[in-house]
Image (cartoon, rainbow, N blue to C red; front, side, top):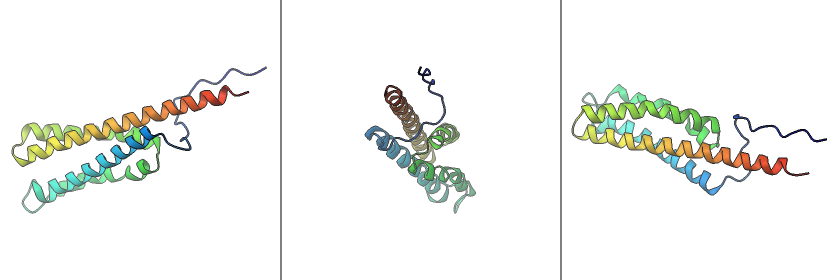
Length: 145
């Protein structure tokens, strides 16, 4: 007598051997958005519109954004999940600065907001695609005699 199949847990699924084209696309979008967000933060605070003449220590705000790069490149689902929450801090800063500052700084802030939305969307879609693939993989595994 066969035991009933275990329900799909909300734990991190195994990475499929060959990631789907859609998962690769979301990974590329996430990595590109993250790198652009880092570059924008550095350029903004060091050269383009720093809070103080000659650059600002606020450029260090991009350091936490460098941590998830390795996890994104290695397809670590956990990284996509926590990065999708971290990015909201940068989104909030962008909205505040976009609505309270003027000139180039406001434009850079709106750029930050768009990059944050792009990064969040990429992370959320990546997680959704990976869970969908894991469910499909589990269904084919449990249906085999």
